[in-house]
Amino acid sequence: QVNLVESGGASVQAGGSLKLSCVSSGYKWSTAYMGWFRQVPGGEREGVATIDDDGSTKYADSVKGRFTISKDAAKNTLYLQMNNLKPDDTAKYYCAAGRSPLVDSQMSRLSGTFYWGQGTQVTVSS
Image (cartoon, rainbow, N blue to C red):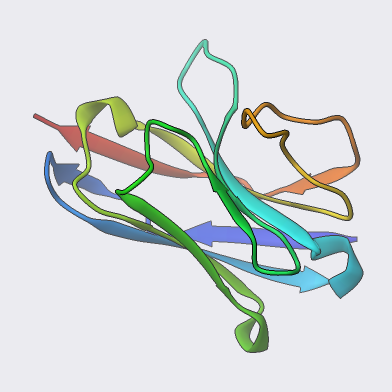
């Protein structure tokens, strides 16, 4: 079992920055693949950024150059640094973890046993 707890969501003005955190607990081999997804009401949960056990990262085209995913293994914490935020970034952001890749090369969710946090709201106003 893996428990994921996100924090760091807030309301900010366009152009601002936020850093999301996700603290994980449980079996480490269940968190070899981790990532951030986001979802707006009525929409699908979409991949934002992922990081694999070897440190390789993937980003959605819409956030490349603005968001950075990283993790601190010693603290069991996953981060998402978000810069130059835009109103289109408004969504609930979820941390995810699994024993297999979370997304394909197009950032589409793959099937598998994944663990999810409860989400943290990011609201960007223009």
